[in-house]
Length: 176
Length: 387
Image (cartoon, rainbow over all chains, first blue to last red; front, side, top):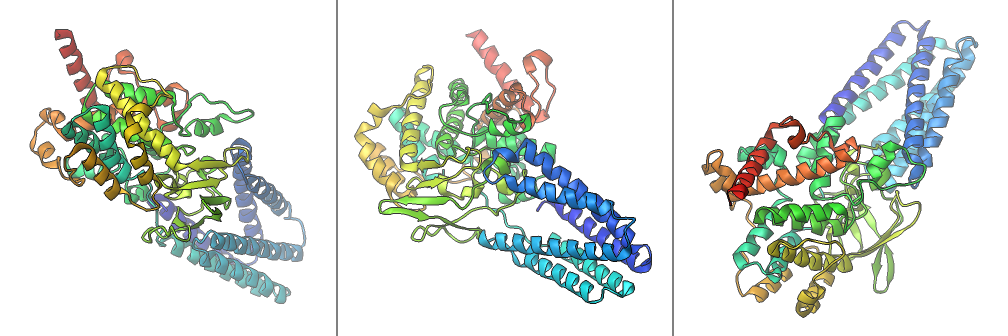
């Protein structure tokens, strides 16, 4: 990781932390804010992934991964932004699904990293916590306040792991 | 390739090509020095930083991955370690962005090798050493590009070592401190990171040090080759590298034109069996064997490579006299090589190595470090005119 990437990671961690504090403070509008940020971030990432696939990765062995990732994320992004008029309960379900989905993806990435014998524990733990968050949301589905708290707690955890990962040693093998 | 080939084998090749023991040592020193001339080292001796021919671990870790940072990395690695084979290569239905990376794939006997040897012909023993490093690396590093690229340099699990009794899967790990385990085919490589421009995907990092070992034969699936596997036979390639180095240095010594696909097979015939034994011996470092072979060849002692050997001479000399010292000549030769390769990449409308400004047409408009090269060229031209 370069210094710039570390700084970027720390800032995005701090941003998520600030965002989670904001939704804790204003939990009435918290859900709408979550949907807006989630939707736009997924759209941007999906477009990046699709452009990368069509210009580069489609010529590469195993490059279809970028295409699938781009399509799924684009779909989720559009869906997220289109949900503002739907009753709050559906939004809760959707957030839980998103959490569970990102948890599964993180665990898969952790397992992939393990198969390559690269650091995998942080990703896997992150994934497990995301899934646990989704399960707890499901249990307390009737209490809006508790749901906001749980979601914010998950976000605070993500923010901290992101900030901690910025200080991780990232060994580089030098091969002349 | 490592010190065993860049230093000891290059010494042997230079001697067979007709250079004296002392000249061969200077060529071999320069060839090995290419792997050590980093910005950190150049800063220590107060030399122009643009002459860097390599990047150390910490420098790479700290290097920027924005456009300028990537261009700097590409200039160093494509010019000195992964010389592009065909800057105008075509592949159907590919974007320009992909082609720019694809065209930087290193391979043997390309036009740029010819130009590199041609450049060495005009100048110093140091430039001969640099050219031999680059030429030898085209054999070892073929099929990888000297720029960070996930779509070109990544490898996957399809990776087998070819042994006399069959194939054995290669297991990669990421411990930079642990030595490669030849007995169980466990090798160190860089971490898998799907980012297109991450440093992990520079050169043959994803294939570990396998391209650097002369004994190894392996089969793998390069991600750029449309699902066609490649069998890399290093003993065969290293023998070709040796024979081509001898031929190239014969051309340089005699002022003959260097042609690709020609090798000094006849000249190395008396030593071929000994060389094959060294190349095929299963070991991480064959310095001792090459040293013994070289000393037997010339009857002279080959001193161990010492990084600081020429340092004091350069530091003690003031400008512009330091350009006539050993390191000064190396620096000029390195700048000339970097300038030439960057220009060829730029001329092919590929911006991955950055801008190149033609001095003859537009005057001096570029990084100030290159003014030393301009002065040296003017001095050479003046001397040629006087003669």
